[in-house]
Amino acid sequence: MKKITKAVIPAAGLGTRMLPISRTVPKEILPIVDRPSMEYLVREAVESGITDILIITGRNKEVIENYFDYSIEYKDTLEAKGKIAELEDMRRVCSLANVYFLRQKEAKGLGHAVLCAEKFIGDEPFAVLYGDDVMVAEKPVTKQLCEAYEKYGKAVVGVCEVPYEDLKKYCSMKVEPICERTYMTTDMVEKPQTKEEMFSNLSILGRVVLTPDIFDILKNTPYGRGGELQLTDAMKQLARTVGVISYEYEGRRYDMGSKLGFLKANVEMALQHPELKDSFGAYLKELVKTL
Ligand code: UTP
Image (cartoon, rainbow, N blue to C red; front, side, top):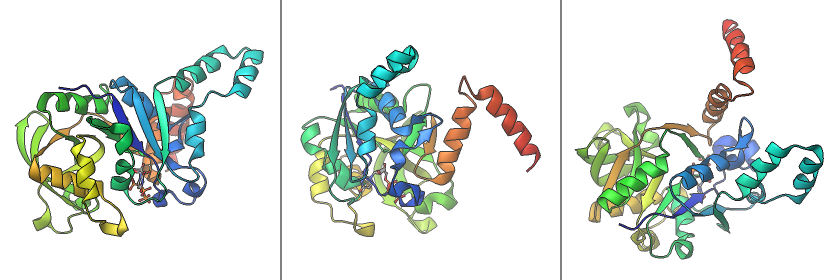
């Protein structure tokens, strides 16, 4: 089976759940303590064996590109100040992978963003990391999915259990268990509104590995909810025709596109941050006493 070496990170959405900040700072570059969430995604891809990453951006998203660019001003200043660790860190970030950027001219949905990557991907399987979902896991979540692809030779969607009452906001997968954490999937429904419409409480969250036939499917998929080209509609087609694998990944997911997810990521990572964990932990302990 062909090794997966390319990934697409769609990051061109308008981020309406993070307004007003998202009007000027893309949610995909919001910090987790001191590092932008996008760096976590790029690192996850690299640690999963990906060498070439295409980030789909849009207007007002140039800061994402700037972050991965080597900054001469900082190099000179850091050298002059003897801040060698910071200089090394900048070097490392800028040379993590071959990172490419492409603009989605209009935010016409996640499916449309993925379709923009067709030329870059060519005829290969590839990973998609949803740009506002940060994952923390012992084995990178993308790697878990790539391994499932290598085993089964089918598109793999990363799934999690979602409480039935929340399923209305997500999608629901029709599954048959194959082995631990792994299910054959033959259908799915996006945002089911009634219990009868729901297949299971497994939903796609944040990561998928797709086969290149998804591009032709996307081109023939009508624009759906909200006038957007929905990636789930195309993946449903793939599930119904050739079947896809649902893989219940191990890891903690932070939805950086929501205010609560952004706050949870910052609090939890600050409690692990070598410089901050003691002082921030002490502060939090005092704070909870006042609640
Ligand atoms: P979301 O649906 O979470 O992003 O897409 P959104 O549309 O920005 O969110 P809200 O609901 O308005 O807050 C998941 C990922 O896909 C990207 C987003 O940037 C996000 O990282 N995306 C979404 C695109 O690249 N293009 C789009 O047209 C839509």
